[in-house]
Each structure stands twice: as structure tokens, then as C-alpha cells.
Amino acid sequence: MLAVNALLVSALNISGGITASKWYLYLAGAIFCFIWMFSIGRTSLFQDAWQIKIEELRQQHQQDPRFSVLETREARKRASPMLQTFGAVSSKWYLLFSPLVFALAWLVILVLSLTR
Image 1: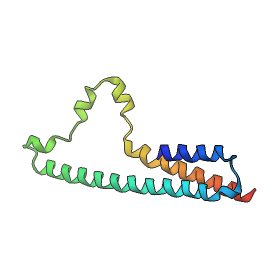
Image 2 (image 1 turned 90 degrees about the vertical axis):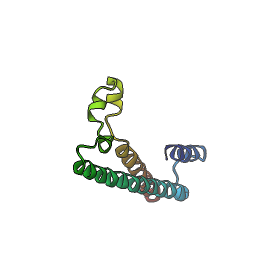
Image 3 (image 1 turned 135 degrees about the vertical axis):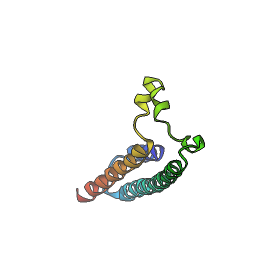
Image 4 (image 1 turned 180 degrees about the vertical axis):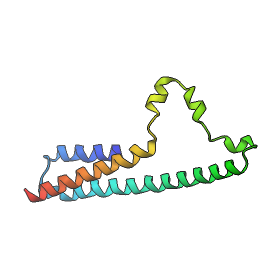
């Protein structure tokens, strides 16, 4: 998603900047970002659903350590401070919100270019 946005911005700059005649480029950028956001959203939804189901199994079988393999809180506390810092934000959040920000930016550019 970042590479495609970089290519779109590069194409925009090479072709002379923001003009109303390139409305299709701005719309394509917004559509691409929304598709990416919904795709990652669906993947994240199922990751959460499976984690919930595994947690329910863990609660039912507390005596069996095999059902606790995904409980990583204590192990993460023992990781290096740098990894704890940079790994603190779940990837699903920036993978969902960065395409939203890009999509909104493309839409703003589209509207501004058509209303000038």
C-alpha cells in the first residue's frame, strides 16, 4: 500500500502536479486505500475471532499448558526494552489507519482539484 501510494505521488509529481484533469488518479488512490483497509480489517477481524475462541478453550482446559501457548504477556516483559517499545503498537492499528489516512488525503486532493 505504501509503495503504490509512493508510485502514485511520484506519477503525480512527474506529470506536473495536482490538476483537475488527473481526477482519476486521485480517485484510484482513494479506492485502492479503502480496499486495502477493508482487506486488512477482515483479516484482523478473523485474527481476533480465533484469539477469542482459543481463549475460551484455554479457560475450559486451564490445567493443559498446550492451550496457554498464546499467552505471551510474561514473555514479552522479558524481551529487550527496544522491542517492547517498538512492538507496543499492534500492527492491525497502523495497518488499518494508515490506508484510511491516505484514502482521506486522496479524497481531499480530488475535491480540491475539482473545486479550483
